[in-house]
Image (tube, rainbow, N blue to C red; front, side, top):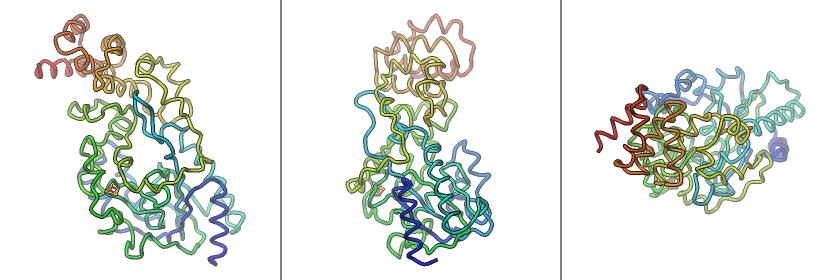
Length: 385
Ligand code: SF4
């Protein structure tokens, strides 16, 4: 395809709301696959077993779409504003309607552009946003959207660390764009990670739970985002303090990155902001009923953690904040409902009230206690006391 035609396509996809549109040749990514396999072997994916099941496809796009020629790497900037004042802190991306849904509408429209411009059918492309067997981050680096920083994020010169990524695999052959600097070759090869980081290690130093174990390598099991979103069970006690006021996700390794200085605001075309969520107080969250949770978080990605997951996280935040106004709710939650929430509420009551008062406040509930998960928290406090 001529470069002129490629630019027409880029312009049309940008007009749909994608802030970045770049193209890469759809070759097998041996280096990326090796790195992914090593990461999986070390167990750094935690409980995300689906990542193991899709390694082959992630390493070779022709296993996803036979005959694929091009990967269209797309980005939508979401980083205009920080989350909240003194209350619970939400990952910036979460303060929108679920980006999977809003971006999929744009991707469906992008598919129609391919059909119209190149006479292909819906069989000749597939699109993914975050949930398919595609390494969006690596394709973004190959296509020159940005480089993979030591924080394992794609960092764009124009958009900093704040891009939602998506990919379209297509049988249409499109002239590829250059990756950042020719010598970057391909993300996943040694030397490509941290390409424009220089000597900076701010993200690795700032991570509150030391989850960046090597440049570009996140141990999910230690990551606040993983623990507050993907983990559906008990948050390890030794990581809870590091979670601080972060109730859902974490932006620390992105926020400290100096490349954000150059980041423009996004156009917000494929996003629907839900800023009002940042106004929720910790008490309001601790008081959520199933009905209210469903109404407040409708159409957001946050609903994925379900009410129990959010209450669990809110207990951790309340414990870290030593928030005495939350104590009545914490005591109530320690005695009723799901063991997962109760266990974290017990932990929080000890942090907020202090051991002596906590034993008194929870004594009655403890006498009735039989659930192993909740008892484990009491035993741990006993040992600590
Ligand atoms: Fe690279 Fe520094 Fe940004 Fe981390 S904070 S990704 S080391 S530039």
